Amino acid sequence: MSSDASRGPHIGVLALQGDFDAHKIILEQLGARVSLVRKPSQLEPLAGLVIPGGESTTLLKLMQYFPDWWPEFQRFKDNGGAFFGTCAGMILLAREVTAPAQKSLGFLDAKVERNAYGRQKESFEEVGQWADGRPLEMVFIRAPRLCEIGPEVEVLASHNDVPVFVRQGKIYAASFHPEINGVSDLHKIFLDALAE
Image 1 (cartoon, one colour):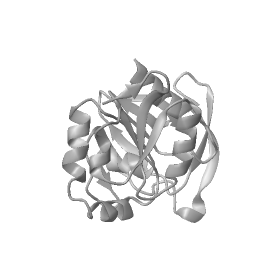
Image 2 (cartoon, rainbow, N blue to C red):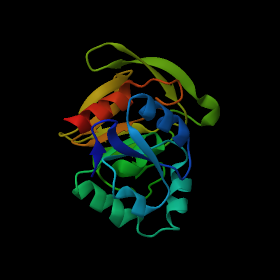
Image 3 (spheres, rainbow, N blue to C red):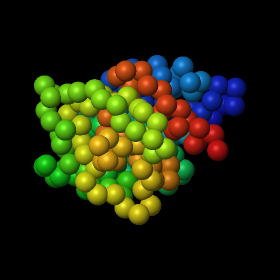
Image 4 (cartoon, rainbow, N blue to C red):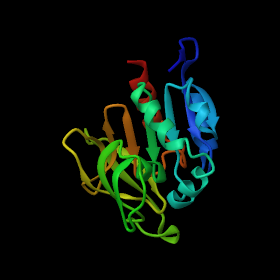
């Protein structure tokens, strides 16, 4: 895991599908060095990896082209690498996925229901709350819902009393898309955690 003190931590953004460029722009604006990751071997020099939204089943199909993804994700985590998943990224990180069930990494002690906030045409933007009550703008697009979270999962933000941004150690996950409306607070929390 490497970082350059002059430019901030070296972060990867999984660039198989989804709006990975929007995440890259926000991270670079916050001072991170950013690489787009398309092969498992590209994880090695990184301090953290952002897994963007998109379509989780499509993401799983694309990952089949490189069978090493799963062991490399585990190795990356075991070596201290951090993860930040948004929407489909949160699904991939979860312990259990429903509606329907599908493969996931199990790094986040949480049960996730896919598309729980509605289909594409039911996408919406609303204001939720940080844990301290401050407002937070949120964009939900085919968003998953956290149905259960383990005791070590910290709720950082919620929407209508449902957790939508959580943390467990170096694993961060959001149901919504902070990259869509340029809200950089979540990315900053991720980067600040890597600097600690």
